[in-house]
Image (cartoon, rainbow, N blue to C red):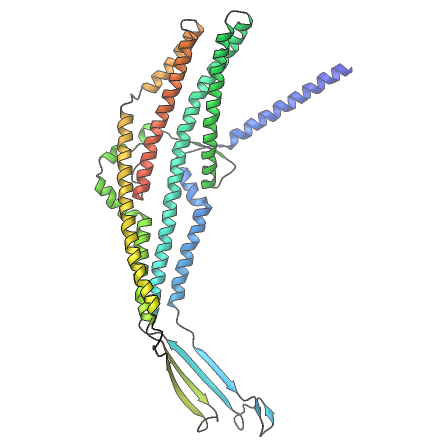
Length: 433
């Protein structure tokens, strides 16, 4: 075999390997693309999200503190024995005949209902941990649903770009050949190619936005090995706007008062401070120590037994500082609850108005507009290739098509974002379930 033949054969094998690797890479990418609907995405989120799973442990920790608060104080046992008996010359003489030893047992008894008050505090703390968990769930779910719809409409816009780019690539190849043969001017060929490059750059920008959303979706779903392609089966059936219009604003505000976990958390925080104030006042009452002791022969008689009672005298420390601080905490929390209540009402009202406004704007768009525009795109392209219209008319139409499709997708995305924001403000998925 000649060196030339060997080089050709080697080049052929290299090209074949490259093609196989490219095909394998394309196949792998296709396998990694996961078409997923919103319901499946939410199920994976609830099962896998590590931040949510970690927050659940805070609830378990707080509930364990209830068990701890219910426990009584342990009794205290003391033993005292003779170290050295000089009369008997014996170490550790605790015998009944000549030794000496003392035994005592004590139990502290909490007064003024301190134990019950501590149990109530622990229960309220557990409720607050649950409030924090469900508020985190509300926030993460809103992020998931918002990213889902935004990724869906961005990918829809990318498809519009791909349609234009595929058509322009064929036209560019044709114009390049015609320009080389002198049948079209260099100016027209360059202008067509410039439009192609511009569309490719804009598509890349959209792709980068999708990549950012994909990264967030992968983190929410704890799956870094799949490219998520949001799937919406019926775009016209997911809006839920008629339900919004049929629902009064006040009923939505009332629903938010009942479901917003951050508001309930603030209310429970007020309850916690009120319970803590009651506990701090009870702490001003000293606890009682009750006990009994036995002395073998070290007292006024042999085998002496005693009843012991002990209590602190509250002359100096009556827990005044903690009581005063607890009272200030109640006053502070009342202000915070009022502020949070007003914030919830404002958020619901703003989201409600935005949802209705975006729907009114979308209603002005003919549902058949997009399909008609896409048909017209193909007609314009065919007429250009037949030289029935100029390159300037073609580029103007392409720009118009691109802008209208992007605006339509953005408007539909705005509508879904407004609905999700309203659900988020209410604290419950009432619309677009």
